[in-house]
Image (cartoon, rainbow, N blue to C red; front, top):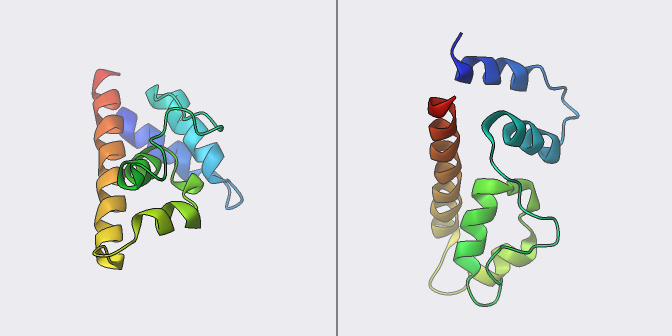
Length: 105
């Protein structure tokens, strides 16, 4: 069985009460991605680079995106449409990283 299929089966076995943190921990363990520190170290400052912060959070820890992160980025001329594209970009970065990790395994 391919590594991706095994990972999907393990992820599907998680219960409905599994939190984002548990899923993130499983991906970290399986693929070798280092989790973001809980203190926010290593993330761009919300006031200086809110878009970069949102994209990184979407890629590495989407359960940690806060209303403050969204509000800091979503100012004129940005709309909800732009927000969706930014978060999708971050999510696809994560997909590519996981895919590359699985290819090495």
